[in-house]
Structure formats: structure tokens, C-alpha cells
Length: 108
Image (tube, rainbow, N blue to C red):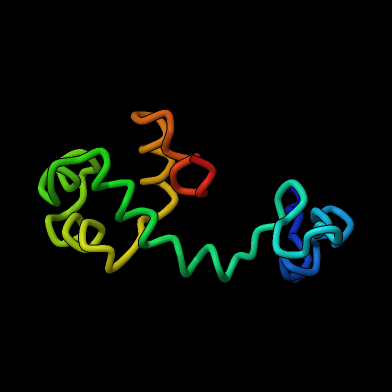
């Protein structure tokens, strides 16, 4: 009988070393050094960025629904900025529209 390894119950947050995270820019506290993103701020901004991205590259919510293979309702919610997408849709968008990641992260 083969033995099975079971991962210990440790949260992801406790596995991340703070030393691995970028340091803030102390010379200019308002501007991060390299990348020092705030996940809460990004999460709050994301639906609007997704909405803006969609309006830049698609005709309407029907076009979005067709392009991503989602329901008309999901296409409409994304189009109106009510919700953002899941990771698979961002990865797919990056495959079909090269500037996706820059636009969604605000680097564009």
C-alpha cells in the first residue's frame, strides 16, 4: 500500500515570509518602491478596472458574454461594473488581448 502525504493545516498567510514582500518607499511614502500593492485597495478598484477594460475592447455586454462564454447576466454585470471577473477570465483576456494585465493593474 502506498503512503499518502497529507499537508499540515497551516494557513497560506503564515507561510508567506514578510521578508519576501517588497519594502515601502520611505523617501516617498505615497509611492511604493517597485511593487507594494495593497490587496484591499486593489480588490476595491478591480470591478471598475474590469468595467473600463471591457468598454475599451468590446461593443456591449452581449459581445462580452459571447467572447468569454458567460451568461448574458454575467456579461451585463461585468459591463456595468457591478462585479469583476474570476481569475480564469483575466487569464483568457490576457491570451486574446496582450495589454490586459497592464490595463487591469493600472500600469497602462
